[in-house]
Length: 340
Ligand code: PHE
Image (tube, rainbow, N blue to C red; front, side, top):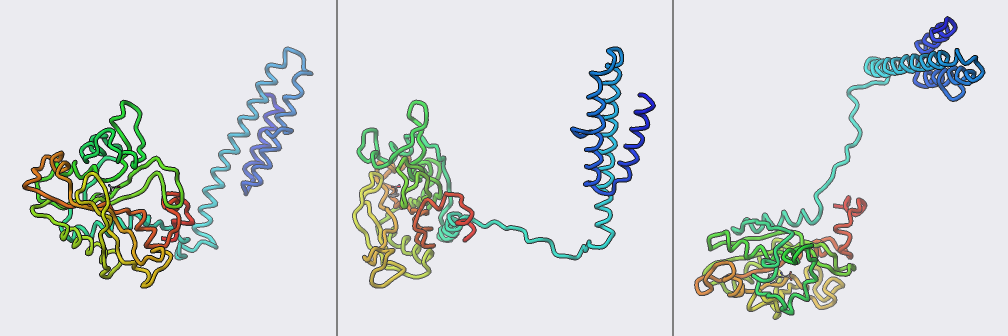
């Protein structure tokens, strides 16, 4: 490096070391290696030099640039650590100040109801099970007494997985009924909370993904009275008091007889917008397990019986919190979620 350049570099280093702030350091950096800086000036002169000198001139200019940048980086590090040092020891640092507010998340309202109901059912001797969301056609339909071409398949707007059509996104939690029968020794009681999927046009009361909780009891001499008893306990758990219930006939191929169970509106005495002025709210579909389903699960219908119900968790959360659009539930909007 020529003597001139040596001097320039020494001067730059001195200035860099004298910098007391990151801001000042940036200024110095700009003066030397910026677009219109010293190095740029040297490079600009090269074309005017005799050919023999150009190579060396270019090389030294670059050496200068690298050396300046190195010195700047080193000084940056020094400044940063001395800043921390100053904060620690000097004025303005108070180790006893409380930290800023940490933002805490909360459980999703669906998770909240799921856990409450799991507790409630466990206290009644139920086990909590789960099953696959991508399900075999066999468990979602066939084993539930809904063979291929059965008209009931139409009401389950099914998402079929790619391939030969054996895999579907489960349209309800009922497939776990048969999976449970295959695995457990009767008698038993189970609940199965989980996600279900239907290929539906979404609106305020339909979403393509929603949550259900399946219930299944298998035992000897099970009757509709057992079903009603369990549902009344469920209502007490959800709404905190006894509510009158009524059964209407309902058709589901995997229960016989099948019902729609209604409860007295917990929000009014004489009709309101929730019960659409009827004083009854539709709570859930249910029924006694169909003999064909018991058989599919490897049970002898002459020996064992059972009841099953399918509680719509999404709907329950909406009822509880007065939510008017089911799409809020899985919409991931923090303004909605932060309310719970
Ligand atoms: N699986 C049914 C559905 O989602 C509901 C149901 C469950 C009905 C259990 C009866 C018994 O449509």
